[in-house]
Image (cartoon, one colour):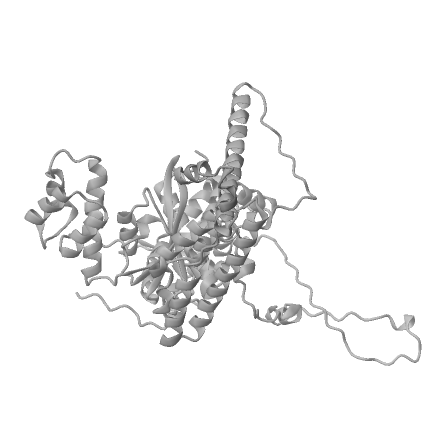
Length: 562
């Protein structure tokens, strides 16, 4: 239907006799909203019909409707849902310019270029040297033949062989192995392209060997990957999270992005439900299920039937169970419940969350920032939502009527002004300013514009006030979830190039190296130098967990009790 029942009733009530009564502001705005709604619906239906026609034509062996772009026609501003301009810092940092960059360049060779004296007049006076820095690169192979001494002791019947330097085990040296990892995960280069590049410069290597170097014997990096996640989870009171699709063995999996300002971790799993998110935040510790009063309250929120809650209260109240001991109770739930798998999942989620909040073996995340996806709710003690996601719902509106465009632009100015006020609050927080901003939120998101679609979105934002204003009590948290979204974008770009992973170890290797590369960028480490350092075991570069703790200013974790 184009119109709601209220719209139909409103239109039916207009006739020639009472027409003059409807020429007031409220009624006109209502009529404009009805027209806007109809135009929007017609546009959506036209696009849908065209899509059906194109699909039908393709099934008949023909082509769909060609798309011609009018380069002279600019799209309406409201079709761009990016919020970069609105939330941009009004006082950007000054550009240091190209000259400042030259101080970072290492000079390997200096060459003085002279002018032939015979080409100069006799009265010239030397005025010094002009300095110009030119960056260049030399790509060539460096193959080493190691001649290893071999000694034999007849008395001990034992052979003694000299050992190669660290990093030179196998057929390929540390520089080449570090380059392969850097190209794959630092530059997002496909394995066939890496093979082409290496063979072009004179390296004899097969595609299968490149794949083996990327996935086999990476225990050193896997260990550091696990340390990064642990140090990252301990580094701040808040964590940011998001997920995106991943294809593993031809099946749809999900890559979870867990991060804050010091690290970005990638964890690929078959599912993306709350239990999976909890397992990730619990850092692979054994998940248990606690059935206390808090878990039963959460079951009510998750719409677990009353008879199932009563059954569990009568049998496992105040008990902590592992997955194996819980299973018989779940299988004995009262019969007749619909969607049994979904019911069991929700019961497990409630019990796992309660256990996660009360256990002492691992610090539970205090504040979790995410988009509004339901699987992130209830997990942390506080759930913070992203202001950019909230603004995106407004930016998606594309009104046809000029009045509605004006109303949208005016409200967006109010929205981003409040956002910038929150940014200022983060720099100079105080209880008085927090109270003022809370009152300002109530004012801004109580505005009634008369543009119905806009008013509905404003009302939805008002309902998540608590999650959007977590920053007022915790000024250190970000206002948006862009860090996690940038991590998700890196995974999407990797998927665009490599499409999918085939094996479990290949999936794990991708998570490991993407985590190390993206974390290296945040803590100021060159990924290529890092890979070379680890292969040669020089350890000039500290372990990432140590660097994260230094930057975050947190002590190392307590030593395990033996």
